[in-house]
Image 1 (tube, rainbow, N blue to C red):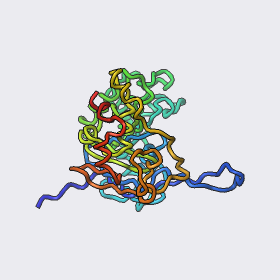
Image 2 (cartoon, helix red, strand yellow):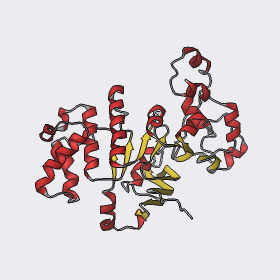
Image 3 (cartoon, one colour):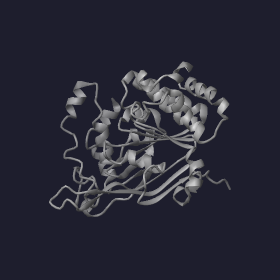
Image 4 (tube, rainbow, N blue to C red):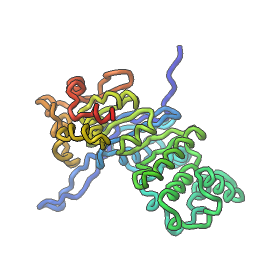
Length: 344
């Protein structure tokens, strides 16, 4: 009997809540921000999982919590079969070396007082990966790997463009010799032409170094280009997860359809025809998420059941799960003209 390989990363019912001070009449009152509310997914070795959704839906918090950079309220994160919450700091340190992050702000994520050589070489020193006599050579190798000249080692971050700073951030992450990277909006702050270069670099590095990615973004085109599977988040929950091709061919959740309908369409006639089919209303506050389905306040299909009963992820196809009471009806209705957006 052939058993399935253990996933590299397993996230089970992850919850991240924050306590914040209220702004009402009672200023001392503390309220709870439901940043992430019961998120579960897995990631195989050498796979890329895209995590997509509107700003504030909990994508970045999920990525940071997976790396133990954010305290979790509940749930489990297993990396290489080990529960991170059960490990002591001494046990966690060598494991975290194999989990690294590339941040959204390429310039702000680099210490302006340190040279590139110091920035990229820090993981080598912290984790004692190479002897001190070989660190400079290793830094130059890493810079060459990401397409930067060796003489960059003596320069400071302000001397580089945004795209070059992101290459430095990638080199710094790779210095720790990771197997898993969280890419938190790695190209959203860059010009379109530079985005293509960074995405190509990430793709080449994944193949060359056998890396696994959690790719966080709000751009469906970028996510579709980079991901093997895609998870859609709304207000702290995953509402749909599937193989990229299946999700992009036939999105089942009304919110996923709304995301596709928001993609600019180059054909004016098609764009005009779907202009009146846009999702209405504002995203509810994460301080007081609505009961039942969290999307029901904006969903044209919402019924009483949606307002009182929370939908759980259920299988609608091979590897395709959706959290919607009326998923098939949503597909049939194509509520927001998603098919036109996808087809374009």
